[in-house]
Length: 186
Image (tube, rainbow, N blue to C red):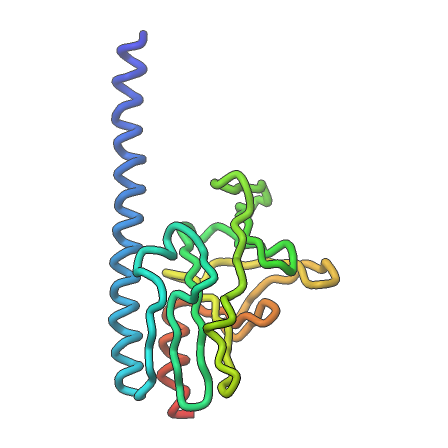
């Protein structure tokens, strides 16, 4: 009996682990390609680009450092990446303090870490008093369905790439690249 269970369980575990590894490798490759494209756009547009964090850091935890800083002539963009592993997940921001929770479409709460992940505010050293700074959440590799509670505890969902969550602009990686390219054009 145990041998039959092991014969079935081992291939299932191998498939699950392989799928997880493949998903991570794909996300890593997508992030590398995104970095390459954003560097190219910044070079073409004469924007300064700074990488305060290591390339893999945003896959594992959030920080008080932006993942990328883009300095344009009139504005700085402080980017934070949020990796989306599944299009079917909602990313909820249930308090004004910007905690992230995860929820399936059928509204069964799912949180793989067992607790909320705190999105800390960026350190003051990343703000320049002379230049306006925009806070940008970049959901990669795509923009999932997002919901959050407003200050009056009303649930709101994000439908467009131009929506905001409080002071944060919300973009998918593709939409952000298009936006950066169009800043100088428009």
